[in-house]
Image 1 (cartoon, helix red, strand yellow):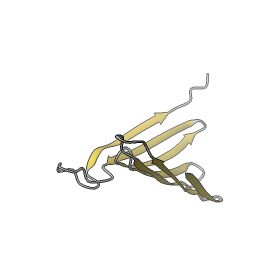
Image 2 (cartoon, one colour):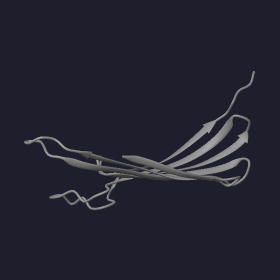
Image 3 (tube, helix red, strand yellow):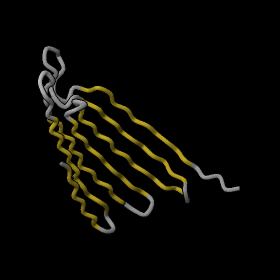
Amino acid sequence: MNGNIAYRLQPIGLFSVSAEYNHLKFPKPYSSADFWLVGPRAELAFSRTFFGSAFFQYNTQANNFNINARLQWRFAPVSDVFLVYTDNSFAENVPNTPVQFLAPKNKSFVLKIVYWLNG
């Protein structure tokens, strides 16, 4: 079962939430499982040249909570600077280990510059 709801507020941006639920039922000796994937998203336009977006994802199958945030500056046509932050953490405690809720898996900042050469 899955669903998505989105709302566009012109000229500010787009706000949405998507969710997916999977119930897997198997015969014995296999175990059954329930998986959730939930992801809110926001995309904002601060001006005609400066944008931001953020995406959060909760995934029980991969035991992952992800944050992805991006700032974009368009300084010329088809030329942009992106600053991206990504954070992956555990979505649940891991039994018999010291891993707790939101314990970090990895984090990163990425700077990307795209410049269009028109010749």
